[in-house]
Each structure stands twice: as structure tokens, then as C-alpha cells.
Amino acid sequence: MSRFDQYDRLEEPQKRGQATEAIVTAELVARDVSVLTPAYDNEPYDLVIRVAGEFYRLQVKTAYDGKSDGAVEFRTRSVRTKSDGYEREGYDGKIDYFAALNVRTEEVYLVSIDDAGSTVTAIRYEPAANNNRANVNWHAEYRLDRVLEELRSG
Image 1 (cartoon, rainbow, N blue to C red):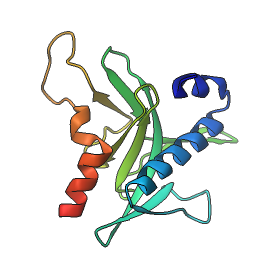
Image 2 (cartoon, rainbow, N blue to C red; image 1 turned 135 degrees about the horizontal axis):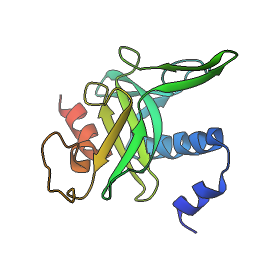
Image 3 (cartoon, helix red, strand yellow; image 1 turned 90 degrees about the horizontal axis):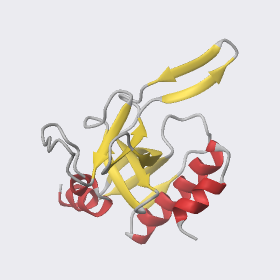
């Protein structure tokens, strides 16, 4: 059974999020990255990593197939249920990177908060049908190993 099929069996979004955090943590540890977790669940970040002596706050997200073929998307706003409805809040100034797991390809991406969209970020792994190449977030630029290499080299 693929990881994607396993995710489909997890009916609660919270369980999917916990699985994503565990997978991302394992991928980071396997690459000799120190991973810290906050003591409380109400922080805007899920993990803190230490790379080359610097600390970075990560918000972990699950990325699913986007609205167009050849891309995955993840939400870049938190949504909390409140007594009077929903509260949506961005992460500007609260995190450094989104760590997004593409459950279909099992790839992890690190996307700087500066590169992320205000509500959703799409990462394209195949060219668009209309061959648009402007303002595209290509998966090769955000793959975990590439971004870690950039952080390590300064």
C-alpha cells in the first residue's frame, strides 16, 4: 500500500497532519539536521531546525494534487475554529519556511515564507498545459536536499 493510500485512510485532518510532521521529521533527521519541537501546540511553527549553526522555524504542510495537472498545492494560512466561525491567519514574521510533503511522490519541499503565496502555494513538477513558465515554483528549486545544501553553504 502506498503512502498516498495510507493518507486516504486517515479520515481526520489532524491525523494526516501528525503523520506529515512525523515523516518530515524523519527525513530531516536522516539528513543529519537537528530538529526541535515546541513544548506547546499553539505556536505558529511545528518544528525548529538547526542548520549550519542557524535556527529556522518550519510550518509543516501536506501538499496534494493541485487544480492543474503536474502541480501540488498546500495552504499557507492557518484556519482555527472559533465560537463565532473560522479565524484565518497568515504566517508572515512567524515562520521561516513551509516544509511541504507531497504525499503522492513522497518528496519534501522547503519553501521560504518569502516565496509562498498568501493563501495557497503551488509547486509544479511538470510544465503547464499552456506552457506558462513565468512565476512558476518549480519543484527542483524547493526539494529538501537542495534547500538544505543552500542553507549549509550560506
